[in-house]
Length: 296
Image (cartoon, rainbow, N blue to C red):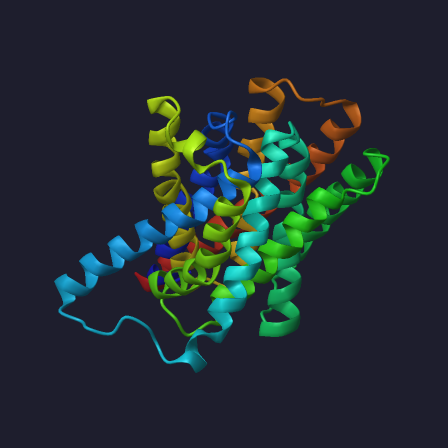
């Protein structure tokens, strides 16, 4: 891989680790209802993104607030997709379905690989196909072992995979794209806060809850900026496989921190998926090593 792609891998990995740890943050907001959390999340992320953008424009002495509409259309669609994904994830965490949410994010990289091959013409090496095959087999095993249609998992997987594709091909920069996305969601979020009438209770409660609500913008915005920046630097197929970091962390949180159900069938499925990740990691290491040797 090139230096640019290596940088993209590390940037993406940082974002995925933060996402993996995010249930800890959202669990701490359990006194606020899920729909209200999503609304505050949008509002605070909007403020965070515009603050970052204002600082950067001042430093770079730029005056343009938005790209032309034609260059923002994909980001508007991305905003709708990511808003839907946020709502489903927060609901899953508050409903003690972190393990099921982690299954969705295990499925998500497979969706990314599929979209990368079909829509972007990305080619996979033999080892990558093996890794994807192992991952697909593991997800299939997990889906069957649940003995129920995993609608939460599939919803999370499909919505975020489509968002990843949009961030890959959209002309907007990571910050510009997130600015348009949060702007798209802002009015519905404010309307929902006013409609539900819980704003005073949410903001006038204990100090810890107020601080967490205000921090939700940074907690949301930073991983998304890292993800978007990474998506611009590396193939969608590699980005998709790296995403297994997030559900692995969420899985351990769900099982060991929150004592959610994890039986032998799930253990088998996760081991199959992790076998695919080992194949991918070894292949990437060998490719990086051979590239470095050829450059000497």
